[in-house]
Image (tube, rainbow, N blue to C red; front, side):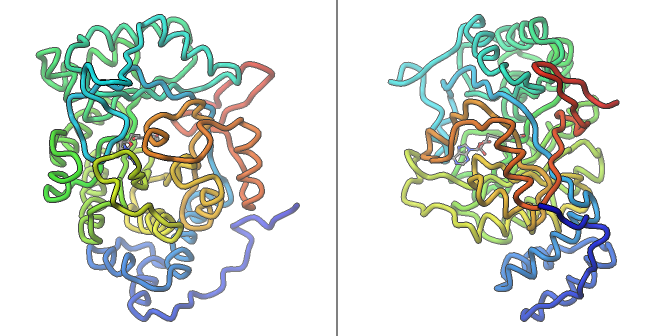
Amino acid sequence: MSYTSASSRPRHSFQTDDSALLPIAEKVQAGERLSFDDGVALYRSGDILAVGWLANLVRERLHGDLAYFNVNRHINPTNVCVASCRLCAFGRKKGEAGTYTMALEEAYETAASGYSEAVTEFHIVGGLHPDLPFEYFMDLVSGLKERFPKVHIKAFTMVEVAFLAKRGKMTIPEALERMKVAGVDSMPGGGAEIFADRVRHIICDHKIDGSEWLETARLAHKMGFRSNATMLYGHVENDEDRVDHLVKLREVQDETGGFQTFIPLSFHPDHTALAHIPKSTGMLDMRQIAVGRLMLDNFSHIKSYWQMVTPKMAQISLRFGADDIDGTVVEEKIYHDAGATTPQGMRRADLVRLITEAGRVPVERDTMYRAVTRSEDSFTVAV
Ligand code: V47
């Protein structure tokens, strides 16, 4: 199969049957920032293809035909959690059936069991355990670094950072400093959910609030960490809540430049306290990607997490604003506990095929978006 590269393809003019999109299209074509009201209009537009066309324009301006993926492994050290979030099917109260906590050696073995494709990243997130000491997590990270020195450690959401700081009786900057010394290289984007208090009270009442999440990210960025940012959609939020979330992320990014990637996460209701909410649809999923790409003009990357939206929709999303489909993952637990029917992991070759068949050029990246070159069971990163 051969494709014309994005830069050499002729750009036909924008067409829509939604007149509300015309002034937005002018701004996008001129590279101007979109307003809160523009964001709401994009969410409300009936012309999803026109919204996608605009997002694709921005995506190709930034990345041409390149589409990124990585070879990673998820490690969830414990599912014991004090938070009882209604959105979550993964966390369980201490003593409940089905709880687990990995001994350190078990976590190292888990890491090694996904290592056959020479992973470049460990993605570590877990429950807010009431008893595990701060040192457990530092030993986990330093032990992994010792055993897998080339692997980037992307660990602890802002919610976990704030919780662990409290557990360790230290300030957030002190906790972040300890994490850096132990070997944490960057942070994943989880726990952001939706920042609006009204929504947070319903879906995750016991977590830090939206402004604490943003402040923790700000502090991490100021200490030199890069992190991702997520938005959980498809539950009780409305269009204004989503736009508010995106604008707040954009403001922090203006200040710190520390966010690498935005990842919209579609809510999986099964086995959660919100199981009555209908599952997300393809249209909703593509709209989040596209509006994220258009509103977050200061984010380099938009990730369509294939585990969440399915591999098929992840392919389509590469024409709706996404430039990244995430990685091999190996063993996903959080969405599978909530009813996800996608595979728990994929091989590198599967990701390459998905991207190629979507008409994009696959680039294996490390966590910092540097190109990775492979030989047999090893890899090197471009500097
Ligand atoms: O914060 C929990 C979400 C997140 C459910 O940074 C749920 O590269 C849907 O943040 N339905 C954790 N979502 C995972 C995460 C993540 C994933 C992939 C890549 C990156 C990255 C980050 O999962 C939580 C929460 O928003 N979540 N339960 C559920 N039932």
